[in-house]
Image (cartoon, rainbow, N blue to C red):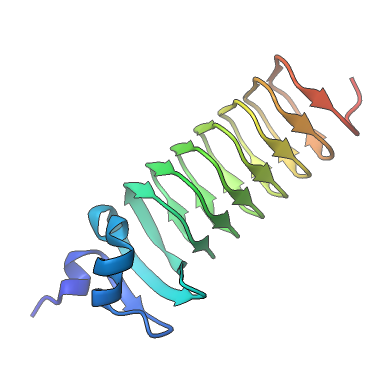
Length: 158
């Protein structure tokens, strides 16, 4: 017998999170396509523990670990995992691997950027492999290659 959780691509709910709470507070998760998602709730924020986000619009919460295939990230905190492709509008990236996509704005703390387009935001530290830097503030990190168009370099040698 297939359960409602399985229909929505949810493997497990933790921390007292129920399907009813998801429907009431985080309907956008149920509207997205996900696989093997393990979700919880803390301080009224959605917690994504692990799983695969296939496509949809992320509207807030904490991403602990998992794979992001595609979609739009509106706001939240990314703590780790693999970003394959998508659009990042705003949020806080703490660690992980960025494969490809468009970064609109936000704060990058640490991680590895493979390629894509950085439009604006703050880069605190990490490894930049390749891509296009349109604008923003670069503080620390290792620039390996790519195109620098505009922005403020603090702690990066020309």
